[in-house]
Picture (cartoon, one colour):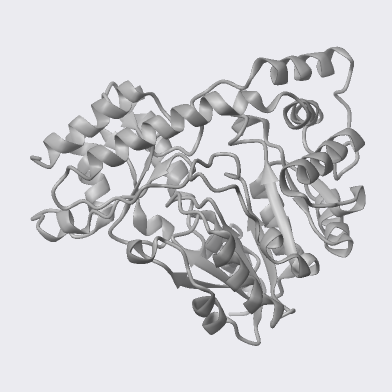
Length: 404
């Protein structure tokens, strides 16, 4: 049977690349929790990586004013001049980076920016180094562009941070990209300046390797140390670094879908070409709101950060009271990432973290994301982007389900 005959028999055949890609586990957990609640079950969902705060009023007002002013038409594919100027000003103010308008692109979320980068840089079988635990979408986005994710693992014992030596050992002639996410989803770990200097020293010796620095949790940080990007630690990497960020986490703007990338001009030109032939511009009204977020009073971040830190302290403290659980303090984000392998080892009905998550959903009515989704079997991700009352109830339920 030739290919044409095969298609005639199966006209709904999908592209082969999809066979290696899974739906987002975090979205699946959130959807499952919503379905159970809609069916009348009492379920507390701690799976979503979404601030529970409302978007600050001055940002919403900027969007309303944009609508009233008629800013509802197409914009330039890479974003309005006002938004690109606001991004450049933010990068200078917060990070001491100098980027021109030609080196900046706004997209429909940081996730969109990351996917565009992968499309622009990767050929089939190129390798991408991804430290684990990792955000669930990284490996599957790499596979979608027919490249190869190379997972480098760092467990609890090394603070969920890979070393420069591990990265150097993973680099081959096929390596094209390294993804760094700090503060990290799901672990909350944050690389220090010294650790990034050491990683930078490796990358200087491998100029063919581009670094995608996913800084989306930059402002959700309470470690006491200032945020550091690999480019701060190693400025000579300017031509090897792509900075990706957005407004979703710091400003509680997840649904507005505005992210951005800053990179050398040839790379941004490629991103602009891809975006012009796919989504075109990000939402015009959301762009106006993002300008207000980036240029406006940054004091709106502090109350949310204080709440996340308080919740972190409660959640991590309670988790470490459970026999068989180990949980490190996070430096930032709004996640705890406990090791539950001790509980699984003595369980009669849970062989792994996936079954453990199902057990908690069925017996306790608490939805968590298993660590396997993040490349870390035996762990669970708990989002504390919800109220202390709900977190207290969820932890009490988990304790009862475990007979702790």
